[in-house]
Image 1 (tube, one colour):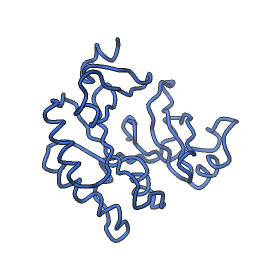
Image 2 (cartoon, one colour):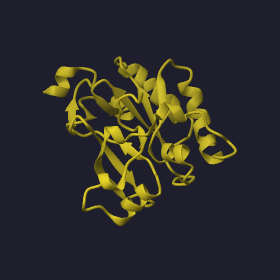
Image 3 (cartoon, one colour):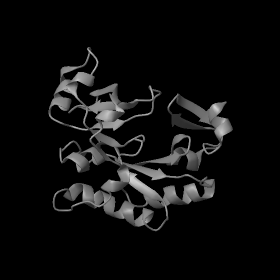
Image 4 (cartoon, helix red, strand yellow):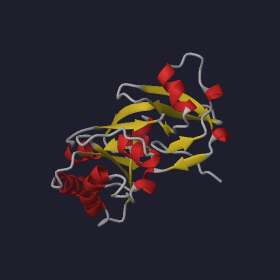
Length: 206
C-alpha cells in the first residue's frame, strides 16, 4: 500500500488522460515516456495530489494534479541517499561530504530537485555546477543555535547546497532559519506565509 504522498516525492503512473487540455507538448512527451512527476504543495480535492511535470529545460515546469488511485510507484527523497558512484560519479562526489555532516545527526534527510530526479530516473538533468537540494525531516523545533551550527558545517564542505527543513506545517530554508533575525518564509499547501516560528501551528494559521 502506498502511503500519502508528501512534497518532493516522485510519483509514477500519471496518464495522458489525466492531463488538462491545455498542456505544453514537452510536458505531454514527458508523460508519454513514463517520467515521474514531483509532488508539490497546493490544495487539491481529496482524491487528487498536486504535482509538477519537469521538462528538459530549467524553465519547463508544468503544474497539474494526479489522481491518487493512479499512483503506481513512489520514491521519497530519503530513498535516494545511497548513490552508485560508478553510475553517478559527479553526484556521488558532491553528496559524500554532505552525507558525512548529516549522518552525524539523527535526522531523516534526502535528496530532492534535479539531483533527486536524476538519481531516481537515470536521466541526466544536472551538471557539475548544479546546486544540491537537500530535505531534512524536522518534526521538532530546531534551535537557531543548532541551525547556525548545521549551516556552518555544510558551508565548510564547499558544495553548493540548498537545504529545506520539513516541519509539520511546511518547508522553510535552513539558511533563512539559521540567519533570520525576524520572520522566515514558510511554504505550505495554501501558499507561503511569513512566520516567527515555523513549528507553531498558530503562526501558520494566522
